[in-house]
Amino acid sequence: MNKKIAIFISGNGSNMDNIIRYFQLHHPKVNFVVFSNKKECKGISKAKNLNIETILISKTELIEGKVGDKLIDLKVDLIVLAGFLLKIPESFVRLFINKIINIHPSLLPKYGGKGMYGRYVHEAVIAKKEPESGITIHYVNEHYDEGGIISQHTVKLEKNETVESLQEKIHQLEMKYFPITIENLLQNEH
Ligand code: GRF
View: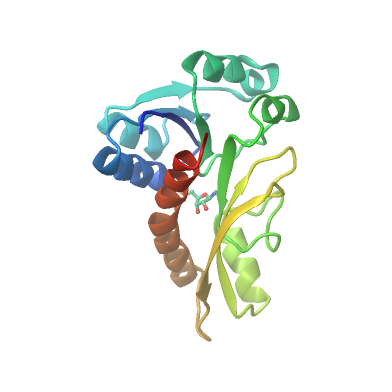
């Protein structure tokens, strides 16, 4: 597989790290470039350790189209949001229809939308005594967490579930399913 993937991050970058390692092992011809709006986040160091090009971007550059232009120049096949916290503007979505995907740590449409990220999601799930939660990998449109769903994977909640224990279960699902979902998408592209 000879493809180029852009991964967008704002923080820890554990999904980014896991995706790149998976492809380096199974599809070494796939190229990556990492975009971050946070200069010194852990994800940037992880990308550098993997010898991946990193590009720092600002909200203004995203809104005004500079980031879109750069992605077109780089001829990326897929844009993966992995813990990227800026809203994706409509102009950007229109440039890359069905080429931007995101991972969300709940079973959308439940527990999505503005402010629903990280532990806030798990706190809400536990407060509602949900019997299960999970992850959703979906296309990105101009509304937070509302694009078409590509795949979902679930976990059961225990009676004594905590935010931390649920976070760990969700993390395991992300590690297992995000890389193979991306692999499937790229393999099914014509
Ligand atoms: C993940 O939980 C993902 O579902 C969400 O942001 C988090 C990113 O974590 N969109 P990391 O930066 O990959 O560790």
